Structures are given as structure tokens and as C-alpha cells.
Amino acid sequence: MTKFNEHQTRVWQNMVSLIDQYKSHGIDLNPLVKGLEGLLDTGEFKDDTLIKQWYTFWIPLEIYNADKLDTGEEVKQKEVIKDLDAMHIFL
Image: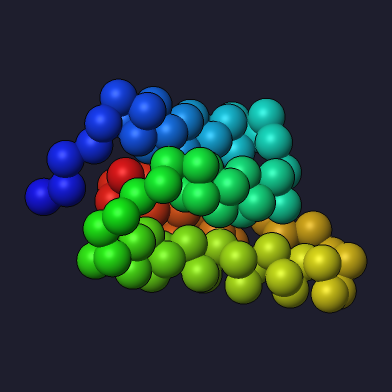
């Protein structure tokens, strides 16, 4: 298990908050996906296993987002909720 410093703990909690904002329709998918990725970078996590696990959950969300950007069609929350819930549990 990775030990987080205080900064990393706040960053991890912010990831959970972003997911909660998306679930409550406070933000769209693109800011969620980009925000999660930005937070991962900000956290300066050094555990390669943790980072690989994180990307396992994030990549499906990025795929939904990329499809949305390519087609211009809005992704419905019910389409991503299974993958989003998996990431939420991981976090």
C-alpha cells in the first residue's frame, strides 16, 4: 500500500470530489477526464503500480471522452457510470 503525503492525500480526495461533481451533473465529462489526469500529475505519485492501476480505471473514461469529442454527441452519464463507479471505488 502506498503511503501518501499530505499533498497527495488532498489530491486523491480532489479526484473523488471531481467524480462526485460529475455524478451530481456539476461538471461535464471532458472537465472530469482532464481534471482527473491533471490531478494525477499534480500529485507527483512515484508508485508505478498505483499509477498503472489508476490508468486502468481512467482509460475507459478517456475513450468515452474522445468519442464524444470526435462525434460531437454528448455522452450520457448512464453510459459511463459503471466505469466511473469502478474508479470511484478504486480511489
